[in-house]
Length: 255
Image (cartoon, rainbow, N blue to C red):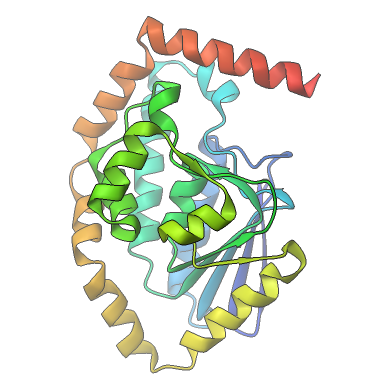
């Protein structure tokens, strides 16, 4: 794999996002994540999974620079696979922890929300769903995922406002479970996993899927209409202008 590094240790699969500085998500990274989850689900030697980024970034979300250049067919394929990734991740039966090692807006936050637990590194980082200010339509299934952890009212307000949280604010809102220093985040993630891995596996995993039944149903529904809604907004001139401004600012920072 080009953008993901994995390591198996003590029945825990460590999955490290490794695409550039910010782990921005394109079609290839999404497909690699799907492959990793499907293999881990079937591997009896894997009893838990830690998803991590690198110091400073968990994932900046969608790679707007790359996606902006996609044609209509490529964008439709990307969104179809992205929704397939969420379905696969939400229905993953084994315990998962997101070690949020830095910034995690938008798609990065969505990935973390799929996990059972979220730990976030201390620091001047942000996490949350800011798609609306960027001009991206949020599918109902992603709102269902956000509200699963924040509650419907809080998720509704924060999503429409595009609010981004600092680590301590995210913990207070229920978006993350614990805020720890970067050098302790892997140890804390392993500790959490081992705590639940000691329980009878079938009882834990079946109960997890029972508790996520509504969420899983929301993800398993036909997403074609949601994808078309997202794509319609994506190609609007107003959205393209917003994206051009964001991309200009991103490229200026890089240079």
